[in-house]
Image (cartoon, rainbow, N blue to C red; front, top):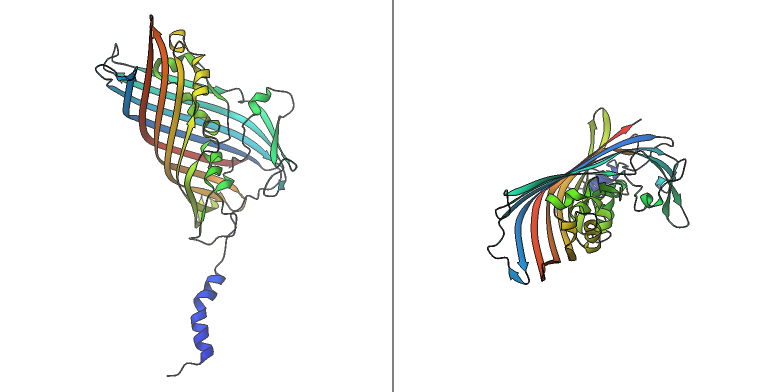
Length: 357
């Protein structure tokens, strides 16, 4: 049986033609002007001490230190946004109401050598931003948002470090995609995910509690953005998984994977925190404190196709943290230099739900 050349060409070309004919979907930020959104974000991290090494004046502490430690940190952020018209894929103007900003940290420390065997502490953090409205106005000349308080004056320091993007736009493909398509995500842009909303100015309501059961500097983890800044490294990617109906809403599904790390010198931050602690704690002088963080996680972003805004998001995984600290103090006339290294590991879970008002 003979085949004509045109028929053979058609047969070989058919798969390519079918691929070109497959529909591509747009998953983009495209809300209507005047849309109001309430976003509820919850982050929970649990850590357990894996290893501890302490030296005094360069020598191992006599008898060693047998310590167990568990940390649990949870953060809740609720904001309501009134969106203006778009400009180059972002709101030209946005008014954000900070409805609820809170954080709770639980510390449990058990030390055989400590009288009573250990100590527990619970630290709450709140923000002066709660209850306030902030205007984000895009400035073409500077290529950044300018922030101001809506309808009045306020403490300008509260506006520093705030991030406009709470839509997780950094996770979007930036192009039309078909089911199964994947793309890389700029790791440094993940700061808007890992520090949701930027520096929300969460501060312990009772700083003294930090000196009783917590490790110095642990409260700094609430401000991931300013602690680690642009130092995120690693890799992250998204994959389009088609559409699915969620709560009666047609959503595009984007599967996210990340494997990132960062390191930071937080010596100055810890020194500032120590100044607010009880006298017996603040008497120690912090000479150096470094943090290293690793995070591996997966999750799904559900994107409301019709409204052009996020519907919900969940990301969970494992985290490892290393902390090196050097401090000096005096015991009578004898100077003492302590050096401490610890390693912790655990899990994290981030969730976001968005309601259209």
